[in-house]
Image (cartoon, rainbow, N blue to C red; front, side, top):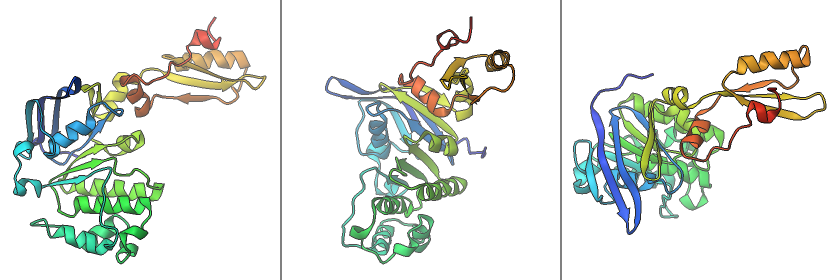
Length: 298
């Protein structure tokens, strides 16, 4: 794992936000260090978007302390905003502009932008530099959104579902870009519904539900803490697929070996993934069949 500075780029304590009778954010604490890729995960309505908008300076808070790059985002001036990059889910641009015109135009807003040609290449749009935005596919437009988010060479980059609608090759290209930026010292806050993406990229993550952080840590540590047990799958002689969730998979396989007197048809042992842990933490996990329910243990 990459070693990062101990400097806190994002420091949030007791963040609260209410909309009428609805509490969207209820006492969130976050700490993100320089150069980290930090994942913020949670179901729709969990408070992620409100938290991100507060960090970016686009929404006020009701209570709590928030510092991003040493300043309160709610009072961030133009110089502070030039140090923050954002890729929102719903980016929109004038349809008649070309890719090159858009990136070069946005570069002028920043004191030390990246090279537009380099950025266009990094997101895989070098073959579309002269194409008008209205001719781009949805995935290509999303790649352009990413290009505009990084053109200012930000110290802190917010990526809100950056690879939605991407094919696998385009998604991997953005993953490589995220790793490159992190290696250069950019601090990145990533929201995503792709748990594989989070597991591949983030150094640390927080899971939010009901406006609260329900778990925080490195992905491996969360898997060890909450990813208990394993699911053993096999096929009965009559072709029926069976499964058992157990904390002792080795013992289960030993029992099955005796039951089948040799090879076990269709044997698979599935350890909990980050997605399983996430679903369990957010109360969306379906109950797994136990040994008694599967009929194996007598």
